[in-house]
Image 1 (cartoon, rainbow, N blue to C red):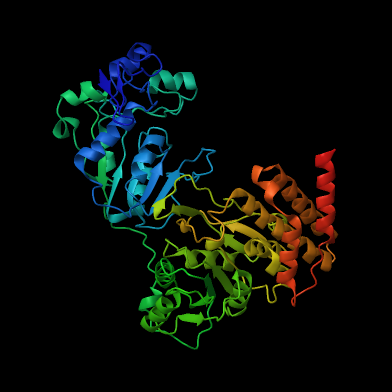
Image 2: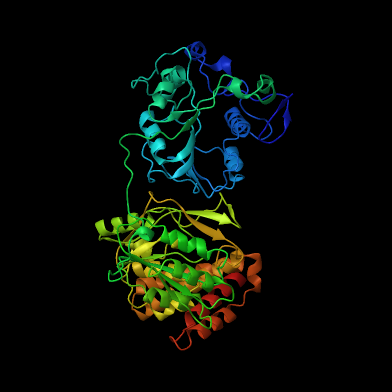
Length: 561
C-alpha cells in the first residue's frame, strides 16, 4: 500500500504518467532524466502528482517555512494542492502567476520579466517551470532580483546526470520532436549537470539531496523520486543591482509650503481594527513627490478617530483629519473628502483596506505624468477574509480600459486607483447610487482611458462582516448595482446624453429581471427601494422614479405572460 500525503488516502498504486517508463523514447530512457517518477505519478484518490507530494514533503521536513506567517509569495504555474498547503501558512500576499492561464485568479506574468520591484518576495516557487521557458538564465536573474535579502526560491527542475551540458536545439520545434528529445511536448530543453553551476551564477545554492533529508523507505511509502534533490536557493547580492532608491516620505523633512502632487482619499467608519494598518501603508510610501493623506471619519462609535489622531501626532503635517458629527453616510462622506483633496492626482483607499507596495504612488504618478491620454490607473487586489488570504477571491477587471468602457461603469478595484483630479463638482445623483465608485468611473470616462498597472503588488481587500459590499447576499449586491445604474441614468438624462442614459436604463432593467429570478427576489419591494432613494435625494435633487416604475411594470408583464 502507498499513502498520499496530500489527501491522506491509502492507495494500492499511483497512476503512471502517459504510460510510464515503457512509453518514453529510447533517448529519454538512456538519459534517465531525474524529475517526476513517471511510473508513480498520479494519486487515484485526489489526482495530485508526485511533484506535489515531494515538494510538500520537502517543505515540511526541512521546516524552511516554519514560523513564517505573513510571507509574500510569488508562485509560478501553481498547483492546486500546493496552493491549498501554502494558504494554510497564512501569507500576507500570495500571487498566483501563469503567463497562459485563463483562470481569473492568476496574474499573467512572464518569469523572464517579472514586473514587481526589487526585494519584494519572501518566497518564489517555480516547480518544473524552467524547462519550459526561453531563457532560464534570465528567469533566474529575475527571481533573484525580486527576493528579499533573506528570501528563498524553490525551483524544482528535471535534469539528466548523464549529460554534462544542457541539451537544447532550436530546430526541435514540433510537439512530437520535443516529446522524443526532451520527454514532454512543451519542454524546450533537457538540462544537464551544468544546471547547478548555472543556477549558482544567479542565486545562492542551498540544494539538498533527498537522502540527506529522508529515510529510504519514504520512497516506497509516498511514490516520490528519491533521486530528485530539493532545489532550494537563497538571494544572491549582485554587484550591479538596480534597486530603485527612493526617499521615504516619513524620513524626509516636511516642506509645508509644497502643494501635494497626490492626495490619498480615505473614508472610514468604525474601522478601529484596520485603520492603523491602512494609514501606515500610506506613510510607508517611497516617493519623490509630496503627498497628503485626507481622512474622512464619519462619526463612528469606536476608536477609529482616536487612532487617527494619535498617528497625526506621530507624523505631523501628513494627515488631514475631517471628523464628522453626526454620521452623514458613505456617499456624502466620500464627496466631502474628495472635495478636500488638493493634489493633482487622487488615490483612494478605504479605512479597512491597505496597500502592500511601498512604491505604489510613485509608479502610478510616473505613468499618469507620462500618459496624458490616461485619466485613471488601477492594479490588482488580494482578498483577505477575516484575517486569512482568500485565494478564490477575484476582484475587479484586470486590464486596460478605453474611455467608452469607463463610461459604461466597468468595475475596477477602488482601493488601487489613482486618477486625475478633474471632477471638480460631483453631481448630486451620486448620493442615491449603490456604489459611488462605479458612478465615478463613468464620470472619469469623459476625460480619458484607464491603465492596469501590472508592476504593483496587490493591495489587500479585507472581507469582513462590517464591509460595505463584500459579505452582502447576492440580491443586495444586485440591488446596489440597480441603484447605481438608475442614478447614472438620471444623471445622463439631466445632462442630455441619450446614448448613455438609454444604456444605463437598460442595465437597470436587466438588474430588475435578475433580482426577480433569484429565490430571495420575491421579498424585494421595489416601491420601497424607490421611496428610499427619493428620501436620500431630498434636498439635493429631484428624484424621478417614473422610468423605474415603467421597468417594473414591463418586467411584471413579461413574467406573467
